[in-house]
Length: 286
Ligand SMILES: Nc1nc2c(c(=O)[nH]1)N[C@@H](CN(C=O)c1ccc(C(=O)N[C@@H](CCC(=O)O)C(=O)O)cc1)CN2
Ligand SMILES: [Mg+2]
Image (cartoon, rainbow, N blue to C red; front, side, top):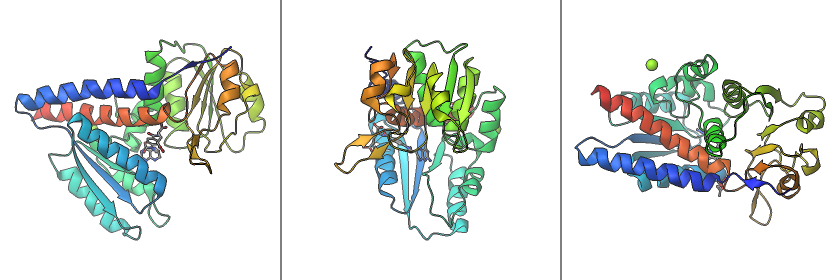
């Protein structure tokens, strides 16, 4: 078997075209465009690539974006004050602080500081709580993007054995909540899981977000499974790879996401989705 590709790059491009049309039409009628504030602290090279992609995408679809590149030694109080400014700014619909932050800063504190209605990353406890109890919310972009990819491929997850590898606040945990909402039977594995291979072997749907290149071997994949790889690692030759041995996994899986071109571009598409959603609600109320 050779797996069909879940093409996140193509879907992201299509979604962006839809947002661009909506924004162009709204602006033509005199409405302001959606506004996104993108904050980066320090110069982590991978973060700089992602932040540049986010800013470029805003420009491409006609979204207003403000960029703040802050020195790595900025204080928590200064960062909080900047978020307060954007919380109060009526031209801004979404605020994102790129993670990870330097060690002296608290991600939890800054995430809670962002107004839940402008939390386009969907990381605020209010938004995560709403996701957990099936209320409408701004949803974390990576898991939301994975769901959009699966829905677009018309993959019905109802009753499936879903295994999520990794329990981070930004991917693994909200991913498990999304899959539960979609009717899957969900297992989350993590660093204390005793027999990862046994869990992976019984997965009809496997989502791997462990941050370890090549962690999941191709021969662990259940024949016919859906494999979603959230990992991104730059190799010595400059190429990118995921947490799953792609070539071997693609021999057994029915569907698989590539790295690059799978989940990464969907994260950006859903960030645009969330910002447009926040903007729609704000302009409708103004
Ligand atoms: N505030 C946030 N920080 C982080 C998030 C997040 O959603 N919000 N997620 C990750 C990084 N991330 C988004 O910020 C992200 C990762 C990867 C991509 C992407 O487009 N990847 C491309 C390859 C890009 C490359 O050349 O390196 C792909 O997979 O095709 C976008 C966003 C952690 N931090
Ligand atoms: Mg609210």
